[in-house]
Image (tube, rainbow, N blue to C red):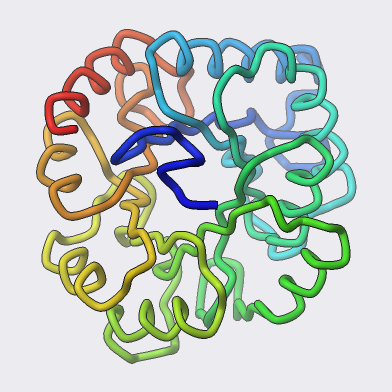
Length: 265
């Protein structure tokens, strides 16, 4: 599916619905429990929708420290909460499980998500240790579960990690677009909340025909400049209260942000 058709707009902006720490993760709050998580997630997705965002991603961002293979309870908890909130969801949504693309595809299939965002190609030295990927196995699993309607957004510049592939990022993007069936290529900064360099975006955009989205560090001050080049953006930290990643979504920030985006559409 073409990105324009998926979001029904040019230059789509996708917000982040960050789950509080889930059961099984070190920061999970046993006293607040799943009820608190559901209410927090519900409030965030309502704030994004009322702020007129184009889409959003459910993500277990606060399951720190991260794992390369998700626990069963992570998949079960995310699926349960998304399923319970389906009647509240009015716009396209995706899934991101840090850092397990098979888990993300599974949740997407079970909940009706339209896309996933993951690190799917490359080998990295990271905070989680040596991080390898297997895009061939992922796409065969996607075929097995009839995931043809799930678009795949490839993050080709992992945060908190060093890519052992020393080719220029535009050559990596060209290779991934050609060989790995990417629906969207995502370009990130070095960590959450930090934007990639404009020149980096330009080099990637010039090399491929696949849509290129900015994946990190987009805010109200730089979105116009970034979207002159990129085909869309994923926005998390800058839409939170006080611009802090772990805080709830601030609806007024979303409204102001989308007003700025609509000036350049």
